[in-house]
Image (cartoon, rainbow, N blue to C red):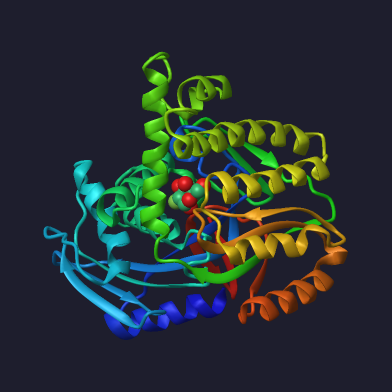
Length: 394
Ligand code: GAF
């Protein structure tokens, strides 16, 4: 972490001859509840110890100067002229500025330098982290007076409207609202949430990064959303009280969707089952029954792979690899799909052997070495303060 912060400070001082305000914005994992957020359902994410760090300062003029250290690119624009451009990474930042302006808030010119250790394309939400970090940083810089949940909504809207991915609210919520040693049980309709302590004695969250990211991910993502909406439309002909799949039951799907459109039926059935699994899974965790929770993760994976069809051969292989390994309580693909990471609950003493075994098998099967991360939960977005060498985050 210190290394990244130092890199940002150096680059900032070299480029803009001043010291920046530094923000840390974490990535996230999600224990269960996948593709449920945009159906008004439930999710169970946590912010993690991988983050994007953003250095910021105000300018006297109305220009926006952006520097991505990791991509070795820079961009100059104006606050009044927020336009699409082919430097894709800038859209996450400009989109947030646009949302602040839409809310009638005054954002002046600013300088921004960022870098991080969230692997790109691994499904750990580096985009949401960047959006949330920018919203939080500009809120501080220009004293805009926004609450965290308002910034979550703006970050999501930036991605929906400016980047063009119709994502739900989970990733931004987790990055902004995370708390160390807790997962967030979030109702994506009401945005009511509880912090559930992670009570998994002797168990760690291990992520195997398939190191594949398929280009169809965002178009297929938007298609899944449409298919869910199509299912709701069919149900509403008879049950107008059903607003989203959150309100639908298996019986309704059997009665009104099954014969009309088998593909839409399978998509919707997965979502209805996943919402139920999440609620039951939270009860498992409260009872300390991680084994029962882990079984549900496997069921989620099967649903995502066979019915929602957002997995890929590499992710399926990673799940098959760990299924019968000692010390693995549960595993599934995580996030939007078509690549990225699997999330695995593993007994601490079994982790090293598991990593060796899975890495060797995956490499032999795909020709690629998976990357492996042991994720710790962390606090959500905050300012980085440095006092005598120690980094404090608030
Ligand atoms: C992506 C999206 F950004 C989230 O909103 C969520 O839908 C997730 O895929 C699937 O659960 O990370």
